Image (tube, rainbow, N blue to C red):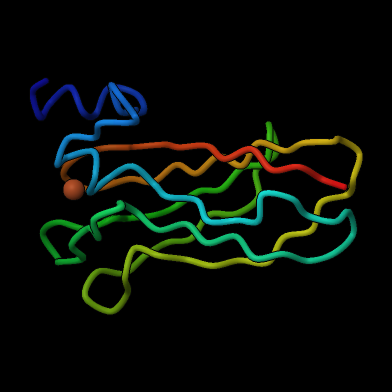
Length: 123
Ligand SMILES: [Fe+2]
């Protein structure tokens, strides 16, 4: 894969059980409870990379988007040098569905967009 192709669409790991060094630094990690209670707030943390990504002016994570199913939840704009590529938000699920798929998309200014998902149960 060339560097240029990283900017064509959203990147996903070829084998999520055996990440490359590039994937370890770019695939978002979603931390949320496996089961949440409808109507009660819970924390969702998204950090970019199981290996922390650099946040230098010339190379950094520009933003992190979070979706729940097809619903846009938030976009967090990150400032290099002054921030790390990790955000925590509070969410509430309505209970209209028994599960929710949280999806994080982030963008590196050098290596393009990357995504990951985590399915949670809603009781
Ligand atoms: Fe990068």
